[in-house]
Image (cartoon, rainbow, N blue to C red; front, top):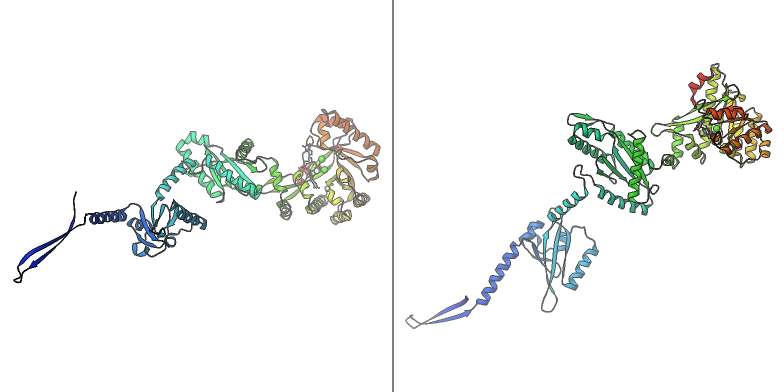
Length: 588
Ligand code: C2E
Ligand code: CA
Ligand code: CA
């Protein structure tokens, strides 16, 4: 064992200056020497440690740092010493609560360990693994804090990469099925809270297999990448596109109304209709899209995905390159939403309405006796919208009044034009809404319009539904009387579906009953329907009313109706509703 001495020599001299005694004093300093060495090593370790180490006083003011601290944070010793550690590195990412619980742990357990986000001198925020130890003095008071940390951003990054690979599609980089379902769960939870609807789009390319087979898998892969890019740019940032596998893609549309979902689907189809350039080739593709909604179609993620998948198959069956809602009524509901009234009004302004004419025929000799005008709405985006959809909705607002005025004006204008051109039209009937019929003074207003166009009253017939007579007010009866007096015929539409009494009908100025299509449908196969038709026919004889049957589709129905005394027939068997010009040709 080595022993270190600290030695002092003292020389004593005589009066000639000659040394005669040497006094040697030695002290064993082995312990001190060892301690110094240890300190040197400690300092070396401290300075050269791979982990950053810093010491602060009890006020968290930095007293000393090592090189790794500078390497990681960018702050030199001069810059760091004397500063509060919390101010120097604070990333702003943690709440006050986080720090409170950290200090609480140090106070009670003497140390804290955990992950923390800090900020480097260059502003970059990074994750570190930090250990803080409290050092006490003899009096058991805090003297220092010694902290050790390492930069774990690399670790985090590789963790992230592993996670990314597990949750994303390697080819397109889009979320895969498991992440999609995960995100859908999150979106659903949000929708449940906010009560906002959510849509899922399920998209499948129409010709992917043939592209793969004819151009090869590499081309197929490139196409999928292009399609995924296109999808990413077509949807909003808050939405998720994912690839389920093969050529199947899904989209989550958060807070999405049917209108918006439709817009997105149309935009996707529109974008896909452009050729996609792969290498020096242009590839044409299209897709079929199915759309489902929370909460209407399903309340959970698998149900929503399944519904959207089913709707996608419907789109395929309907001829591909289109979208389909899972709920067939969705398209109609689309229109029933608050937007409908304004879109109806806009359609009126933009003249998107026209009238068609469905001829009516004599059951005796087959001659054309008249026609029913039926309203048509063709929207440039939504296509033809059936009056069976928009009339009932218009009836719920004042839009029906404007619409009715539009119909009578369009009809009179057409009739006037035919008359001016020497074409004598047969009796033309038009449908009158229950709402209008109930309006006081409506009959006079109507007659004023007819007279403005100089249309003779006897070529006009009004169809009012039996149900609109049910709550017949004073005004309804008055309107009917005025119209009848002025020479217009009145026909009861959809007859048999209401419950009007004979006595009541007798009091009204009617000229015709129209048997509803529902009963005509049953002629030849439903005894009940035949019985109702027979009852209507014999009742009308008693009341001396003419009878017309609508919705006649077969010879059998036509013959039966004729044999049982029906006067006139209308239906697809004879003619579908005709455009004005085609009807003109028919009557010329
Ligand atoms: P509605 O008054 O009962 O009109 C008859 C409906 O049956 C028409 O449908 C017509 O196209 C259809 N139809 C006629 N023959 C056949 C057939 O043989 N087979 C089948 N399957 N259908 C047939 P549309 O045009 O869709 O009209 C639906 C309803 O919309 C009408 O029922 C009517 O209530 C209302 N509507 C149509 N135009 C007007 C209008 O100008 N004003 C008002 N207030 N309502 C209208
Ligand atoms: Ca009708
Ligand atoms: Ca009907």
